[in-house]
Length: 417
Ligand code: IMP
Image 1 (tube, rainbow, N blue to C red):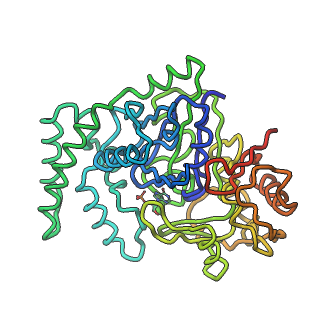
Image 2 (tube, rainbow, N blue to C red):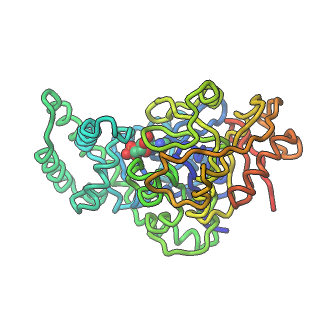
Image 3 (cartoon, rainbow, N blue to C red):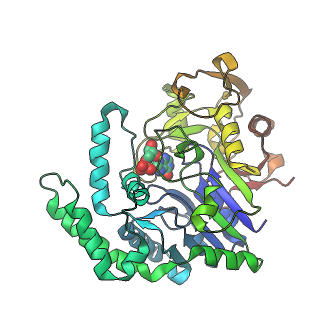
């Protein structure tokens, strides 16, 4: 299928970066369709670790172009820093990176606004990444935002930036730093405007010419503002159908790959039925190195929730699943999978209020002791690991066609139908 959409099935951090990087080997372009600098997509390549935040993951492949869709919110200062860091690591993006003219920009004042909103929420704080994402989407939909195209004329964006500063309640002692950050914002936005493009036209041209495009999501289905665990969600749409809207192309047949971690993690607040606040949760965190790629925060960990994963597979219309971090489960004598909630009321739930009251019912499966890190052959996996994968396929309602067994870009098992 020429168009492949890659989405997270959980609360983000499923390992989408690695999956996209792997699939990008044969693709002409990777087009990011959601989020902004809140994302952290990690790819291990040539002995080094690259964390991408706004630059599409597939751009580490030198022949692949990177597009950023209109549904993303772009921090121009961070974006330029990221491209410079990539160039100094040996991965220059050159003129392969293009950003939608209509993508909204994250002004530094938005981070202050967000800080204040989080403080006001007290114990119900969302636990955001602090990158100004929520306020950027608020201004977009309130029709008061700044778009990349506004930076094509320096006078226009400078006066818009001034208006935002005038309308922001700046805490004492922060005015000077904000003024300097706003100047840097205007400079960076003007520089970035050289990359402004009509992304829909670029994607259509590649698809019409018979080339492959990957639409890369950010965050995950359970953080989607419509279909996730509202209000503990992000502010940009994360599900497969939003790829068309963000990139500015019409709906058409596409292969949808849902990326699912072999266990569950979450950062920030909100319900998490299978969270383990015991030594097993700590062991998952330690073995999986579960610390945020953007903020460094320790992630909350727990067993895989097949009730929620089945829901996410349905919401996205997944063609197949990419299962990541399977190697982390090696050494657990028994592995639990949540297959229902108590009372069995929620087998086919739509995620909404009340999830925090759901108590998981687990099905235990035998673990395996062998270290499968880096394994690239399905038949070489321990019988128990294969059984675990097949069990997840039957619970979640989609085949597992790709398994990641280690951090390196080629630590992958591909399964064909
Ligand atoms: P925001 O996107 O910074 O507004 O944060 C809203 C929620 O989404 C918080 O719980 C964040 O921790 C979470 N979040 C945002 N981006 C990511 C991500 O890339 N991975 C995991 N969680 C994320």
